[in-house]
Length: 240
Image 1 (spheres, rainbow, N blue to C red):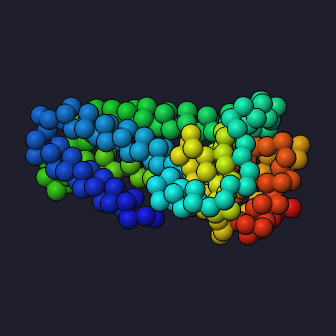
Image 2 (cartoon, helix red, strand yellow):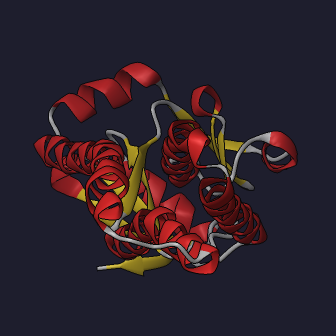
Image 3 (cartoon, rainbow, N blue to C red):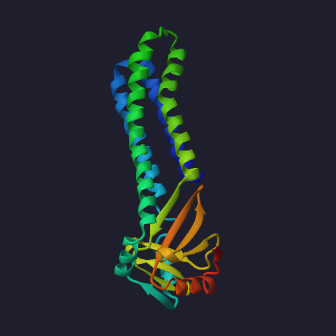
């Protein structure tokens, strides 16, 4: 887990404790704490989704270093588009990713339902007068959906594979650059494996990144030439 993720979780725990304190000592603000709680969960889920879609390497200094080398091969956007149109396997994968996005969106509805079930149906039937016990009861109400969300996020990252189709790219003796997508992959390709997919007219570059798998798809008419470059300059491990 990265330092940024730990910081986010620390802030989340602090916020949940604060909400429990406000609900215990200032119950008149219960509705306000609900909107704060729902807003936080929504932002957390959206941030997690955005972070998971970010490639591990972007332009900046990495791309500048690659551009300083010698250009070996280039594939334009039109060529990639024509080949992608014929790759029905890719369309099936994209459809599966869409299902996960739908599940993430439904997660907010589950949190909303839990909040009203717990705070407006279950909690009013409980007779709790001790302030410490009230605090614990409220903390459970706020903490359970957040813990459930964390569990879902961890489990989904274990099985998820993120695919990036390079829609127009240049290959140098120092790496690969996709200008339009701000993606730069530097040679040597340490940790990557390359797999040639002749029927799909593409090469698949895969690498584990922060608990899940990143895949870069390099479509081209002459994938044999690209594989030759990756072997010679990228020192990539080839998957059969």
